Image (cartoon, rainbow, N blue to C red):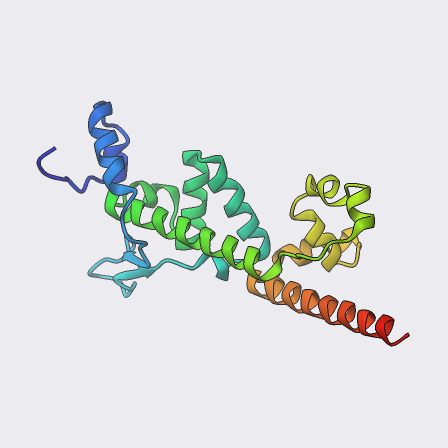
Length: 199
């Protein structure tokens, strides 16, 4: 490959040359995350902005962040398109009209955002305490199959009618609440240990 052609995505997806697609993919997956792109709705005769901001995934609702993680991990084209539509506001036809540099730049943005969210949660929310009773009944592994529903259930105070309300809250609100609860639990645990030592 001597020269990279910035194909429209719909043209790129129609290419029949597998080797060329692999060569392009090897290069395109290393693009920098794209934070803005040319607005496909902008015309000389309307007042639409020329640039379109790519929304940060962490600015979405808790439910949308959960959905974006699931769709990205499935690694299906339809799922990636859905995430791109969520963070750009574009329709599928408009996504197909993006250039491959824009499309793969957005994918790089999605990958970076989801990695940062995962790291943030691992570093800030992971509970390192050891509870012998919970370990004895294998509680953490048994509840892990419910995934994010555990978090939603705790935040809704086990009221299933409030689950959708929790999912619609901004992700950063949920993250902050979980961080506060973790810190509060750590303080209570430390105070209880101090009380034991005094007795």
